Image (cartoon, rainbow, N blue to C red; front, side):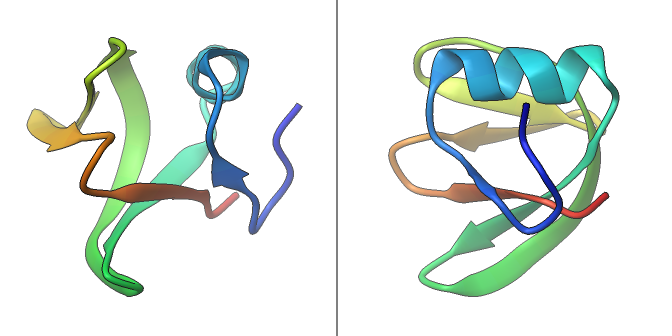
Length: 65
């Protein structure tokens, strides 16, 4: 299970973060581009948080709490 401050990398990480309703921030080039929220859905290519779509190839997803 992801812990605060960890980066989501694998499908199971995203699944657990969604299931346990962790708040996830979105980073690009080491900078926060969205303080995020709870993951609504995800696929192999993208993550939907608060209605915003972020590409996994371009972003990092960090557990906030």
